[in-house]
Every structure is written in C-alpha cells, then in structure tokens.
Length: 128
Image (tube, rainbow, N blue to C red; front, side, top):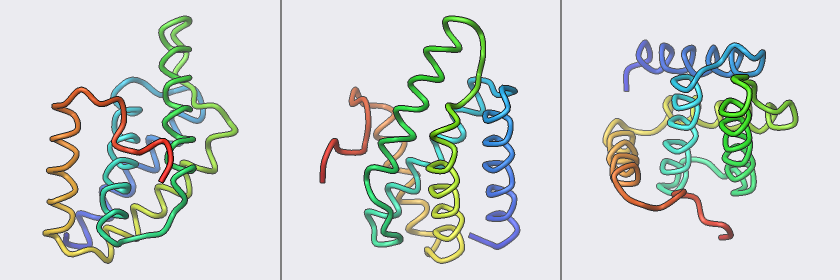
C-alpha cells in the first residue's frame, strides 16, 4: 500500500474514533472502526503485530455495548474505558499498513469478506 493511501486510511480511522468517543458517531463510523480492528487482527495472524487478543475482544464488547445503547436511546458513544484499547489497535493497524506488503493487506481484506459473508459472530477467538 502506498504511503498516501495508508495515511488517508489512518486519518479516517482516527477521526471515526474521535467522533464515536465524543458521541457524534453513527453506524457507518462504528463499522469503519471494526473494519480496521478486524483487518488488524488478520494482519497480526499473518505475522504483523503482537497485540494481546484481549485488546481485540475488549473493543468488540465495547462496540456491542455502543450498538445496544444506540438502539435504545440513539446515542453513538463508545464507552470511555474502551478508548485506550481502540487507540492501541488503531496504532497497530497504522504500523501494519506501513510495514505489511500489499498482498498481505489484500489477503486480510479477503479474510474479512469471508468472515462478513459467514455466520460467525467474530473472527477473534474467545481464547488463543
């Protein structure tokens, strides 16, 4: 991935986090954050990164809570206690985009498409 594309993706992800942190998020921004988290997971499984699985699970739980709150009262705000984990995982994804070859990024995107087409609740195991 060229540097300009990686920078553009990184900026979009970090702005989505700011919006969702401040209560100005929406379903699209939450989806974009989870896309980055899942791609980061797949890239880590390919050898790019060593973030604990618990960080990935924490952000999944935070998104589930956010979706429930949005459904109940219309507020799209990520729980404050999950923000640090999102920051860690977005930084991981930024470094992966900077270091992983394009074919690995494309392979991660293909894995994400397969996951989204399936019936599993998460590509991240409960324990590793």
